[in-house]
Length: 433
Ligand code: HAM
Image 1 (spheres, helix red, strand yellow):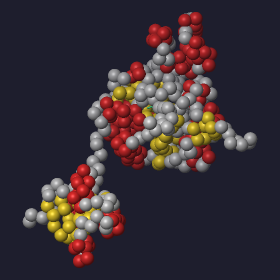
Image 2 (cartoon, helix red, strand yellow; image 1 turned 120 degrees about the vertical axis):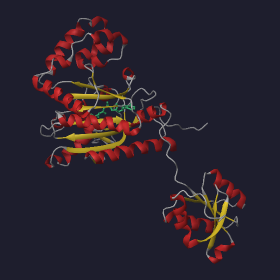
Image 3 (cartoon, rainbow, N blue to C red; image 1 turned 60 degrees about the vertical axis):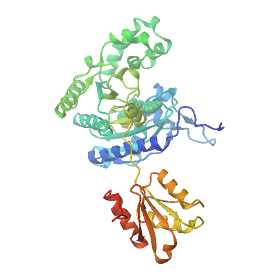
Image 4 (cartoon, protein in one colour; image 1 turned 90 degrees about the vertical axis):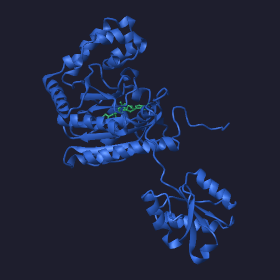
């Protein structure tokens, strides 16, 4: 038994899974380009206050799930690993004066996030998000553009059955009055509330709507709905977002209990689910508008909207559908030799081929030619280059392992011939005429 294991809630992405992630990252990068988002990176950790102020002190993410880093010195700053990307991206937007750029400033980021969550399938302590943010446009058209972008990502990734849940959670004008009404609704049954929910009644009543505690189901079902208490501007905004989505042909379901787990949201809020899996607290992605966040982090009042899609959950969903499309490994060439000890010649030729862009491996074991060829076949190599006495005259043997044919070829022609043969998928290399 090995003595060390990856920390609980984290996992190693081994080659097959890493390549499934890489495929999603490539789709995300391509989409970001098409939709005009420029990729940035921010540090994996920030001053804790960026998250406390940005995400909200009384959210699960900050209260329970923040990985705090112990200061190294007396005067040390208090840092935390990023639990999400938005707060750090807005911090970067402000730090680098991006408000002078023509709005909206469209930024994308993909990378690992950290939350001290209770680990289970699809819920990790280190997980990967693809995040986009459009800062400086109050919507509503861009809200629809962003939701459509998220939906397109899932389709291109190979998940056709993703449902969009949409809501408006109002703004500082209409939300306070609604929260009073909501609190009154739950207060009627205060004695029956589970302890955590009773505490939420004081600290963050909106989150009561998000409770997955079965004891809360009836109270949530009968709760007053935020969409019925929106102020006129929020109501119009929400109607217009829906009109734009309808006009784009993007299907969605209005979900009045959708409130999101982070405090910075205003107005538009949305989540993506696999159809039929809406109740399982396993959103594939989510996002919304955050018109107060830039000001909270020290900027001038500036609207913004974005989403983050959880890549781990997309990979899991693809696996449940029978696995993400296998990435076919580039066809491999293995350089073998008649002289078991002549490893330098084999390595030198593989190096030349690699410099020419060819996927080549040299058999570096001191073993008989037959063994080397067996190894090449086991690796799924299409071609073997056999180095022998002809090398003195500048020739090698090119063997087509699938066709079982072989012919001599000048070393100078080798790369060109291999590229031609692998590109045109011609299996024969002319050994039988
Ligand atoms: P979020 O809903 O907290 O939003 O996370 C977005 C997505 O990240 C989730 O829907 C889920 O797929 C994935 N995710 C979250 N926690 C975990 C976890 N422990 N394990 C695996 N996957 C997880 C945000 O993070 C916002 N920053 C989104 C946003 C961007 N809003 C505006 N701009």
